[in-house]
Structures are given as C-alpha cells and as structure tokens.
Image (cartoon, rainbow, N blue to C red; front, side):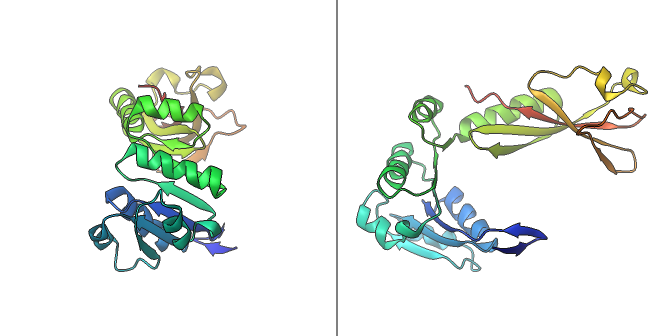
Length: 219
C-alpha cells in the first residue's frame, strides 16, 4: 500500500476482458493509477487503442478459454472487469472468474437491461450502460447537470440545484427532500462549499444545493 494523490492507495492486479473503446480507456486509466493490468482480446488490432503510456500486459485469445485466462494471470488477480460489446461473453467470463478461479471482485458490462436484471438475480455484479445513461438523462433533464457514481450495485447521481428564493433564511432541517435524495453540501457565491452532514445550516441568498440522488436502475 502506498500514497497516491494524497490518499492511501492499494495497488491491485486487475484483468480486463475486451479492449474496445471501453476496455482500452479502462486499461489506460487503471495503468496510469499504478495498478498492474492484464487485458485479453480476441482481436489483435484492438491493442493499438492502448495509450503509449500503458504499462500492462496484452493477451490475444478468447476470454472464456481457461488456458488463455491462466496465461493472462487470472490466478493472481484481485479484480476482473469483462467489458466487451458482447453481453453473453462478458457474463460467461465473469462466471468463470468468480466461480472457477475465485477472483475476489468481478464485474460484467451488460448492455441489455433485461439481461442485466436476470444476471443480478444470479448474484453477478453488473454495470448496465443503458440504464446508467437513461437514469443520468432523466435526472439531467429534470434537475440540471449531473454526474454518476457507482457504489456496489447502486448508482448515485450528483447534481447541483438553485435554491428557491423562499428557502433563504431557513434551516436545512425545515426542508423536505425527496426520499431518494440527500443534501450533501451547499455551494456559496464565493465558490466555497459547506458540507451538510450533521449540521443545521441556515441557507443564504445565492446558495446552490449539491444533492445526491439514488438513480432508478430499472428501464
């Protein structure tokens, strides 16, 4: 364990299945963060998408072949992300990693929301870009610009909202937020931020709410 960007950082051995746009971007970022990354793709040309700064290992082959997985180092992996454009390939690779090789943390990209719901019921950790996009757009259209954060099986959308004039002078405890929303902080006109945990802040003119909203993952 060492310090990275001022925080304690645990270096991990991470395997990525797929090296398309999502896979190569993920590999580049993980490598830049200092992790040991091993990526598998059945298309050699996809490795050309990797940054010249990428310091991981590339492996050509089919990711549901156990020999390919072993040669790529799956037996020493701390985590695996299957992010090809093929939902079925991602799920099969994730199942192998979890049930046969016992990789501690396994995630699968699943584009089809119907498959996503089924595989989650089987206990697989999934990320559904379709659901995330819809949830983000719904919040953005109604509330303004937002950013999503994945926490376990949940997605939390963060967004800013102008404070209504009739809220000025009131305490945070006097305001009723939606059941799926939490006020995280208040941004002031001088761009400073006050965190709201365990406080009963009095709202000032020009304040903006920073709100965390639990996204609806259904489609």
